[in-house]
Amino acid sequence: MWATSENILSGEIIENLLCRADYLISSNKGDQHVFVDKDFFSNNGNKSRNLDVLNSIHQSVWPKISEQLAYKEPVIDHAVLLFKKPGGVETEWHQDRAYWATRDEKASIISVWIALEDITEERGALNLVKSNEVDMPSISDFNNGSLMDHELIEDKKGGFPLLIKSELIPEIESDVEIINLKRGSAVIFDSFEPHMSRENISNTPRLAMKIAYSEREDKDYFLISASDLGTK
Ligand SMILES: O=C(O)CCC(=O)C(=O)O
Ligand SMILES: [Fe+2]
Image (cartoon, rainbow, N blue to C red):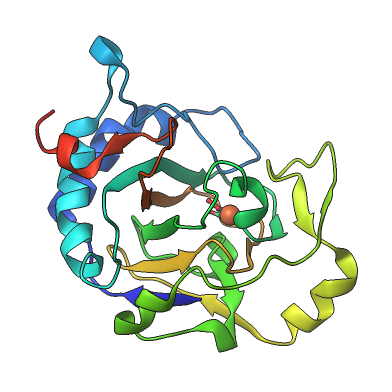
């Protein structure tokens, strides 16, 4: 399931973030996958990075979703920049649940995928299943879906080796929505939402990011708890 939320981040926060990430945007390193500098946001004692920017992002995003999500102890599960360089390859159909089943036993992770510029299909917009769209109040029903069969395909350039089985793709592709997003707007989706994005055929990097929330429970792997973030 998924929903969109317009103007979730202000221009000022985006400017600040892109300024910090400028070394990645202007780098000539042609990563073909979307994960650039996986530790851009990190919480590692005196090597913590960019938690002040993450806090400003969290303070904007959280009020828009927290009432619907009944987390007892919310944590930022992870937060990453998703820059797809020109020529960055297609990210093929998958459900994130296939990757997270063991570390998020009760399926609580939700992802907020934020456009840091206007994003259209030829720049690598996300594709989701059209009939899975809900309005924002209904995100309280998130994470009740089921996991489709995935197959492990090694050597995938797109960085996602676990992909929905090819025989299931035609049905998904008969019901697709391409999510063209304006700068500062977001799509919020649960761990069961099938998604993909095409190659970036434009000549500048596609600028997006993701902040993912989850229930703390007895997890030993998450970025930072929502309550600690404001104090860093
Ligand atoms: O940003 C993209 O194009 C895909 C990213 C993705 O699948 C994910 O972060 O789970
Ligand atoms: Fe994904």
